[in-house]
Image 1 (cartoon, rainbow, N blue to C red):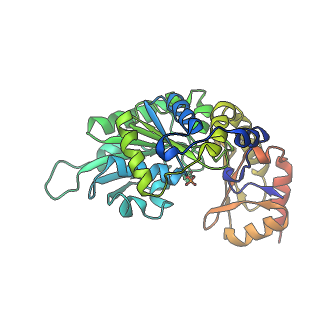
Image 2: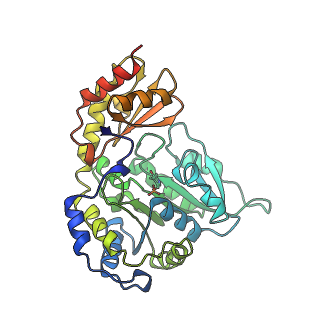
Image 3: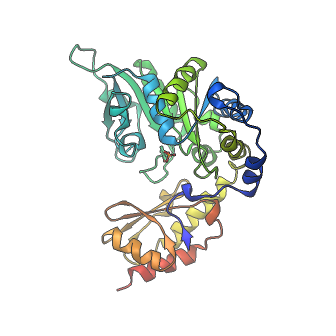
Length: 339
Ligand SMILES: *Cc1c(COP(=O)(O)O)cnc(C)c1O
C-alpha cells in the first residue's frame, strides 16, 4: 500500500524512538521536565519568538492562541477556507467565545487589500476586531505558499489596523523550505505562531506554539484548561527536538516527489492535475466524477488518498512514502478510472 492520505501518517524515525526511550523526564505541569523545557527553548529560537509551549496537537495550539489573544465577542479574521475555521470543531466560537469572520479569497491567499476591505470603522454595533489568522502553507488550497513579501504586507496591514496576528504554520517548515528561507523568517512579525511537529517532520505527537513571554505564560494556563497539561511529556518532546533539528531540510524531497507525481498524473484521462500548481508536498487532482468511489477503487489498486472536495482528491507526500514511484501512482489512477 502507498499511503498518501496525509503527512500525519508518518511514523517516528528510529532515531526518534531511540531518543524517546532514553529521554530525561519530569512532571511538566510543575515545569520539571528537562526535555520539554529544552524543546520549548529550541522551538522559540527556531520560530524567532521569546518563548514557546509544547501542545498536544496543531488544533490545540491554534485554539490556545485564539483563546489567549481574544476575549468573548471579539472578531477573529480568517481566510475563508482556513483550517482554524473549517476543521477545528467550531473552537473559535466554543472555546474562545469569539466570532470568526471569514475573508473570501479566490486561491487561499490573503492580501492587504482583502484584509483592509473586511475591516470596518469603529462602531458601537460591531464586535471588537482583535485577531487575524494566517495559514502557511494553506491546507485546503493544496499546500500553497503565501510568499514572504505578501505575508509581510498582510501582517503589516493587520498591525496597522490594531489586530494581532496568529500564524497557523502547521506546515510552516514546508513554506520555509519551498522559499529557501528559515522558519523564523517565515514567522517574522507574527504575534504567535503554531507549527506541527507530527506532520512532515515525523514526530509521533505534538506541535509548538510560540510568541512573547507574556503571551506564552497566559497560553500555558489556557492549555491547562483544555486538558493539555501533560506530565512526563519529555518522552514526546524528545522526538519533537529531532523533528526540528533534523527533519526540516528533507522536506525538499517530499516537494520534489509531489512535483513528479503531478507531472505523471498530468495526462491521465478524466483527471485535471497541474504540476505548476504544486508548491510543496500536496497534489490536488480534480476528477470528472465524484471522488468517493474513485478513492475506493484507488485503494483496491494499492493507493490510499483522501478527498478534499466532492470531485477532488488530495495526495500528500511524506518521508514514509519517499520510495513512491510516480508512474505507479499514475497507473493506479488509470486503472481506477477505467471504464
Ligand atoms: C493539520 C493542521 C492543523 C491541526 O493539526 P492537528 O495536529 O491535526 O490538530 C492546523 N492547521 C493546519 C493548516 C493543518 O494542516
